[in-house]
Image (cartoon, rainbow, N blue to C red):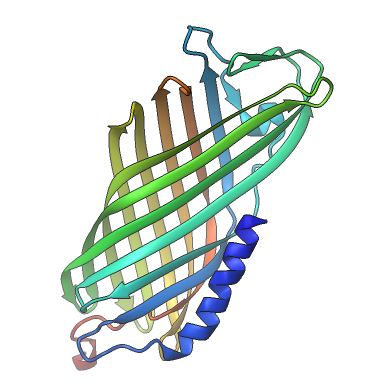
Length: 274
């Protein structure tokens, strides 16, 4: 429900603001996109107890019945200060529930779930990213830019025994810095985009690494409005060694997306003289 209201709010903002989004002579102005993403998710989690009790290494989709595919909204909003410098915010939220009669004994955060009981599972993984981008090369038909920023992941995973009512959940928020590289190529009104984002570090006793790769093609429909189709691959790994959270998680998804963008496909430098 939270995700639905947030998306409706972004849609309203997009509809109100899009007609007034224009590019100044120096290339500055707002840009935004709204779209749908159909990822196939794969989630592994092991929640231990600090006293040394190890949890079961669980694959939430195959072991506990979480759906591995779901179409979800995605959104981005940014401001271009000049042709070369911009700031962008991205948002994504994947919420899933499932249940299954388990075929083994499971331990999750010190709580035992017995063989042949029905376990209900809830997973919510939300990512917010804010990044500053600077264009290093801007010469038609090529453009190359670098990005740096912060990527915050909020996750909650809970298990509940529907027979006994016993439940256990774990939640954490992990901020990770990120660096990225993006290449653009224009060809007869079409734009190809290839992008890679990566980082690895330890924050507050949680070790994390992030890999994110995107390949897309977009086409300008009208002045300022473009349609983008692409494919995204994302992997986040976390290892926690904290007083209230000990264990590890690997969350990955990949799949196609379709975005409607306003102000995203600005002309590359020198294109007017081509």
